[in-house]
Image 1 (cartoon, rainbow, N blue to C red):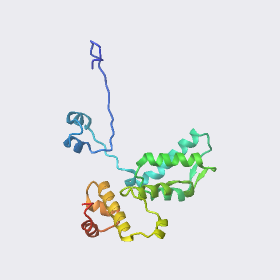
Image 2 (cartoon, rainbow, N blue to C red):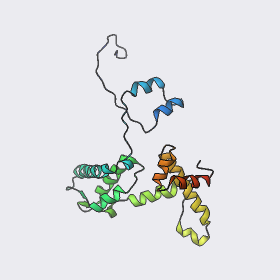
Image 3 (cartoon, rainbow, N blue to C red):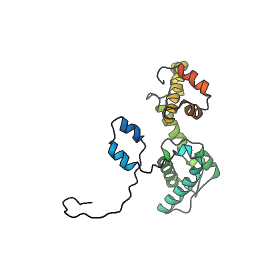
Image 4 (cartoon, helix red, strand yellow):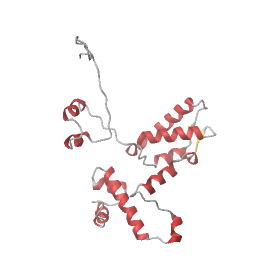
Length: 199
């Protein structure tokens, strides 16, 4: 290579590791990513599944982050209870590993003991917020019942939101989306036929 402004070629030995959460082959087709750069980078692709598909890694990563932040914050060794691990394993982590790390860091910081219990985790509130506000920007509140609500319309909106999200996460694969929702493929297709906004 020749440094900018230089006149002499310099030999270098480098390896480039890059990461993305996008499907670059599709981005190339859509004209959003340079084809020549894609082929330069895509020599040995390594696909890392999202954390929700690697449940066995949740415990290992949780313990690692707990130890990391306990040491960073000058706390005694922090342990996660088996109940906390079970609680974390059942969560889908839409924010992937970064969400898990932030959650453990916050829990270590706020914990007054050296053991993290399920109630020490703020995951349930966070999960509820994403679920409630993530459907067409709407918020559903049980307190609204006293004012009168359209239950069928609410349930339909929620169902459409889940169907759309599952299909998005499954990359358009309806069979996989059905698995995410614990539905049969036949039931999935029937529900999709009821709505115009998901198909």
